Image (cartoon, rainbow over all chains, first blue to last red):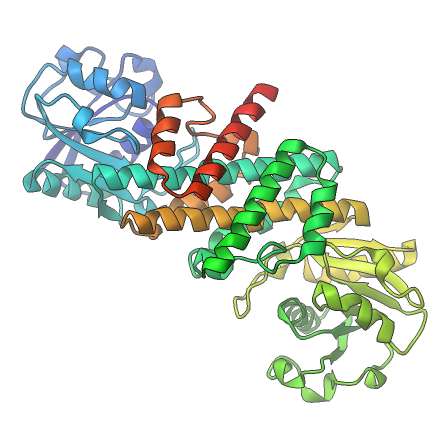
Length: 257
Length: 257
């Protein structure tokens, strides 16, 4: 039986709590013995109150402590833990393992997904990126990760940094392009919902085609007339700048292939 | 019974042929009487050979002629049709209605989706944007569109132009961001498949949240340390330029809200 404690009550913490409780209910040899949060109220309905700790001194013994708090609070939390030589991991894509307090055994348990409050998500499909200082600790992390997800990867801090930047491109920046699409639609009194199936299919294509094979459009086929017409239509300077730079990048990319 | 003829045998033409035949099979009062293609072989297995025309003079009478060819061939095709005053539409997002030959009644039948060869797609979910010169023609287009899709919109040429630019942002440019994500992963020996669930969830979020509400990440929360770390990691100048411009755009956007 692997005893786990989660520290935090935000978005990621709540999704992890649900995933671990589900695994436990399914009969996996795992036990979520405690959740730590200064704000016990935010865990209402998620876990029985007897399992909530609001003070670090209340923390009981566990095989694994998962710090699921915002990046800028991770170091402080790891410094305040009142024990030594236990396995303590964080869930961040951009925080190096080495910045965790080294009085405990350190590791990373990074579920790579965008979590939305109150939107259920199937944890089984979420890749979990693991890192640890020893092979024994890795095995324990792997065991827990495999209980809740079908996709577990060993990823070191350098790789995780790159992965996090890549995630910014395919998630944050992609969402911003949706925003621009929505702004253009609003400006021309076109319902943005018309683009929803296109957005979904664009993402789904990637599961069967490489991005290079999936690339289409005026930039890809060097259709200068259409590109010029688009540039003339864009009245927002910022949108025009982004249109030009991405068009050029697709064209440069085409030359490399 | 609405008699329809499709002109073309490419990607969009083939998907339309399948959708119309399916509608016909389901008992809708529609009849795909002919398909025109110079390359009859490319229609093999799609439709019985007696219904394939390879010469414009073979074209029979129909209520609706759908030109489904590449943008730069539309005008030429519309000029070569050997009849007058019939309803002729094209399927393009960026071609103006006014550039069709005016000896026939003109219209647009634009299914807004990214079509992949040999990848089946549920036409029922594809928005079809319609335009015509008269209300009577619009009604006929609407009837046909509703047979094959649950989402039909009246969109004039100006709106369609804007929609097409917006589609470039959410499809072509988004796919290019996937490409950059993939390049970064390859450079750091990280499997790109780790990002697949994130890509899918990013797209799915948009069906329940506005892009503004769905925006997350270091640019959105003005996390300067993470942004700097990302910029330091990017060795490709082009990637760095795109990172900076999109980060800035997200930040500017945040100020506007």
